[in-house]
Length: 180
Image 1 (cartoon, rainbow, N blue to C red):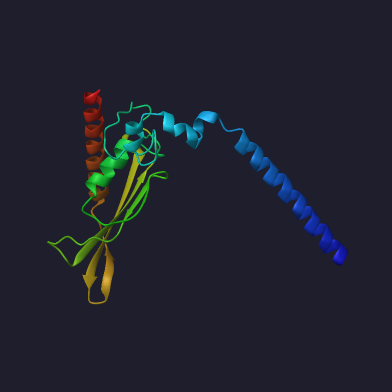
Image 2: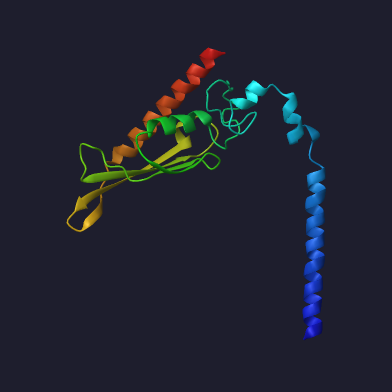
């Protein structure tokens, strides 16, 4: 029994050494220009405008991107991402993943109708600015005697929100092209 356990421990140790050795080799093979030390040689104003460095998520809108490379350092189309955040800015956001393209809001009750509330899940499906690159799910609840209860949502509500985001994204893209 002790011999069997010693064999298992030895085997695990050997596998761990080979795994760590493979990781170390990959780290050493990285191109030199991608290392952090090279950032000092680039124009600092370009890097300062972006949260994630060069080519990253541009918060100031100062950089221009071609439609082929729209998205920069995020995993989805940057125009759709920004237009989505602008469109739902009145709702509390519970989660936003720019790499996966998922934006989830928390429940929002309009001031005009405090007995109903809405929640929106938005999925940006790719890097292209296309109508099928966006999926919106709208949820609605009504305050009843037993608390909040699910209620029907107009079938067109999701489509209207998608159209609004797509229109805003196209406007952002056109404004960016005019700046060139």
